[in-house]
Image: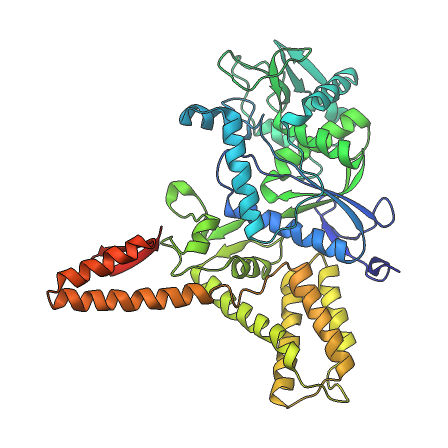
Length: 493
């Protein structure tokens, strides 16, 4: 018997606006699609938070015994600036600015994306398709939508007819927007657009002469619309109807709304049973943005080289920090929050490691089974990681009490407790024990700090030969001293 047969998950469904019992289409199997990155820049920390949420969902479903097919795409074409139907392709623009091929941009930032997610200990998805690898499927999907009367071609571009679709369907049901309101709040077309109505969106765009990324189609040499790719890839690998579709809250409209419309127009079916949306990440109470300087890259968290944090934090501490907030809540990224999470993470890891050395007794003064079910109940309640973590710290308290000799645990329960803690800490939350990772670095820092002090003393004594020798010998082994107004620091080359 698989665990999922005894554990009923409830998922907050953005489509219905309430928590619903999770019942997969095929018993024991789960199809899950998550919108991946547009690979034209380094992965944003907010994107990492979204993908981390679904990594946790993926891990929990697998733990329960479901056979999960997790599809997360790579957008390597068709995503125009401002998420609109006009302007440059984001990847092509980056290629033009850097004077390289668009696929060089794609390769560079796809590698960066994978490296960052690996550093955060993400599990790879089952399938990771690309938009450019599915041009044929997208063209065939457009043909079907045109044949069904929900799209039209103008001057080599093809647009989805939102007004025609809304006559028989409900455009806006995911985002809870009404077409009449969208019409009221949209400016009239200026006469230069090929669209019938401002609300229509591109399925295929005719490429301008300078547009590098282009493919032949029945309508023109061009490229697919951004919304179309996810519809083509999700249904190819998961079927016309599948269980879970996830992404960031910012994708709910128009991207996911358009996905629903495309599917219903082509297949006559609502494609997804459970829509899940992770909330945004802010920093120091404000929107994270490069333009304002309120911004940090994931690598800067690990190096500590950013004015918003006072020290470097390990990937597991940063992961623990993010999972302390529910995926549907706004998460405020702050230095104090990271410092507090680091203390909590270290307490948790110390307790897990102490399990190996606890002295067992004949009895247990702790209802282990009740506590274990509370951990499952937290995850079953829309993947409530903060409640799960609170329950884990209940066990930490008990572990410490056993260690101090103020309470007891039987040998059988000790084995069960160790197994359960490992399952939730490592397998489901995806944390890693980093207690020994920084030992060598800490020792190196202490040794270099000592040499810096000796160099300062040599300089004070006007022994510049010794001062220079310390600097040069360190440089020879890849340690660069940096003298500044606030003293001397070092970097590793």
